[in-house]
Length: 100
Image (tube, rainbow, N blue to C red; front, top):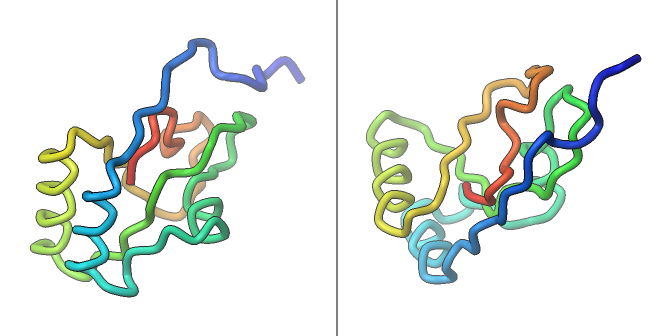
């Protein structure tokens, strides 16, 4: 197969500030995870690319919670990567710059 196994470009990941992780955990409690297993599960798709997982995974339960998570990400200039079922073949949900 001739599919590339690494991204065709290089980007430097952004560090997610600890203050943002603290704010997410304060807002979402156990529904904000920084556990490696959870981050790896939600940071992969069906593409051949191998990049680091997101810095945190937030399990929102309403439109308002999504808005709150996105507002925090905007406040700290952190990328947001939405996750559906992880079936992308092109790397759409990879956290190439870090993020949530």
